Length: 522
Image (cartoon, rainbow, N blue to C red; front, side, top):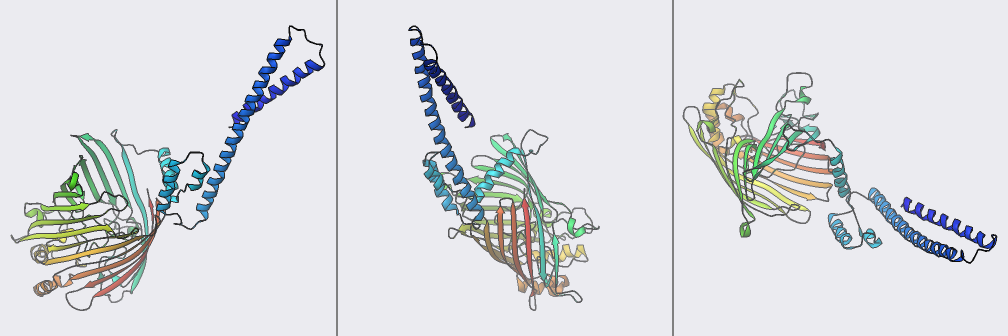
């Protein structure tokens, strides 16, 4: 624009100079000869045309300057409005409507600028894309792309009553003599680090691998032990994706339990891990088949799993076969689900069957099994209901039920007698969560769960096995949280959690926890 104004002024200066020179020549100079008059007339004509062209260019430049000034003023007004307006004042429906209006209007139209609305989230996404192009990419040994992700998570909490672990309580326990009735603390051990690698096309399938670890693998014997933690592998998966088929192998969540509660106070171990949520990371090989046409909403998954077992309490770090591995068979699982294609408001419902043969010391066998039902669907434009229900037996390796807070003194006796007795008991549990999203930044969640064993069977077995009397019969949890995300990479959360743990006899143990979370996603 500056160059255009400079060219216009230059043309005007030359025109004025030529005009004054010619006027002087006509008035003060001697009369020109008749032979010079045609040449002078041509110069005047050319000068006139140059002046007319300069006037046109100046008019066009003035119009463009006015349009740019109006656009800049409108943009500044809208940015000031976003900065002064309360968070959440612009909803997603308004943004979509404005986008549809601006797409059909001329680019320089003032009506289009008046109709355009850009939410803060859209600005954040655009800024993130720009920053992504400027940042230094993660370099791998191969030529294929690698992506680094994770969350730096700080948790502060205050506990009321006694629990088995203050930074990640799973059950409430009786108040011990000499201990206070509560505690406060903080932790960063629930921070996560992940790597995702995009591989080549192999046999027509796109390949992908992801790896994830946390720092909740234990507490070292040193200063700062409660804050540093020990790193542990959470997930390590390799995927092969064809158009309608996928093959996944590695350490993964149980695919027959796909939903997780939304909480930032329980991240390294999903919410309700000991009260209705089957979650344990398990070595898995599974296949997934998606359909097209009339059956396009449906999906079938089947696979083999090698679940952990709480029957193995060993004094050494050597690995001995679990009851499932002793059976010389994997755990079999299959899931049938119906799903919608919407990314903003997904809906799904699935039913699964699990068969887990187990063989204990002494030749005692248990035919473990489970039937599960999972669901997730929107209720209203801003609400969602999700959850899971399961029943079966021999599922201790997948979580979902409470364990004893004590450690058995005799590991052989536990593996030969106590563990088979627990595996033979029927289990039942589930959880459900109600989510309300005020907008892209504000979210509220209310969830409740329960999980436990057959109380009468556990009571009868504890008569001849003292250790079983320390195993809770049932565990219930409830949490309410609020999550605030001012940016796509920053979050704050406040949560209250209540635990109620039932023994085989007597009144339940009750505890509560209030927590604050601050997380930065990268």
